[in-house]
Figure 1 (cartoon, helix red, strand yellow):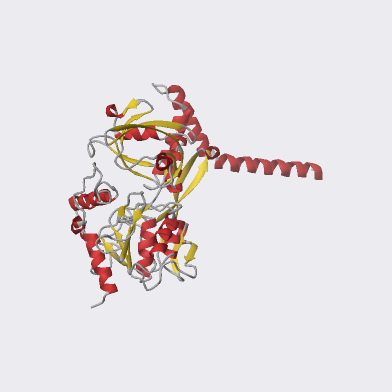
Figure 2 (tube, helix red, strand yellow):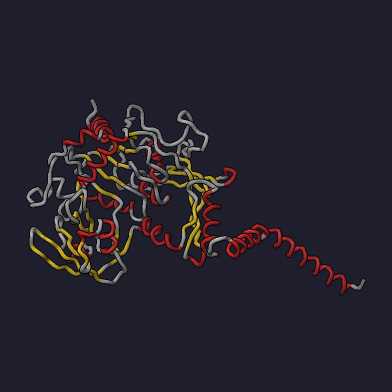
Length: 435
């Protein structure tokens, strides 16, 4: 055989090997494509290939763990807006029946289109673009008020029996993830406890892109006015890991915050606090958690507990110690998210609850000694209802002279029914004024 023929044979062999490798690599994809084609053509009822593909992706990812999923094109915008903390609309919070007799403005975000248009707490929205709101429910009214940026909406307002027509242009609204003890008349928050004004109170309902800066902006003006901080992470289902790191960094000036480990428990990253803090390191902190505190909120609670920076009050957290990566597909129109790592706090103890774990196993974040307070569903509902009233200037005493005001607890005496918060106050005050 000539040298040239040998070279041609070698090239052909390499091509064959490459084809075989690709064939083996994409065999499962071919099988899936064949199944989609077969079902689409032969199923008893018409079904689109797109729907079948979406269902296949969803089923594949859901088989991994409860936190992995396919984010469809229809859901991606809402999925991103939650953590980006922005949406298109007017920036108005409303309530309706059965809580209120009619669709009522509870608050407007500062400097939002609703704020600039002159909407006030207590205004009744009786029409949206000519549609009488008496015939539709509150969620439908909210949908009608929302819309594309730059479009206009016309609202018919009943203000203390006087009809007012307001037209506003929708904008991108920056949503808040951090609230205080009670909302003020201008829709900002009072971050000092009414019943203990030397203690700052902040409740974070998620860890979005702006949560850390929201906490920082809430605390900076309080320098010299407070002796302690309560960070309420109850019912906080998590969010962005890097935001949890940034929140911890507000209170720590060195040392480990969190470490992540990937497949085979190989170390991926260790994240340390940067020098300097927003909060003095000698200022006592209590962190409130419950069984619904998960993921990023567990990162914060576990880190501050392990670093002896905070008392943890409440009950054992959810036990979600895995990190999801969100990967765009379909040209960025959709995404898949799946677990790519587990995180571990400074102590190295496992946070993630495995399927076979029992209450006797190690998982989640445990309250500090003497700080475990468990609420049953009824008690939890009462605590949640108090927080809802505190966010309403018509209920929390801030607008007590308003004709529609229904202040039933001007001195926040119902705080006594939130035994977890009361215990946090008690423990933090013992740090401020030791016996």
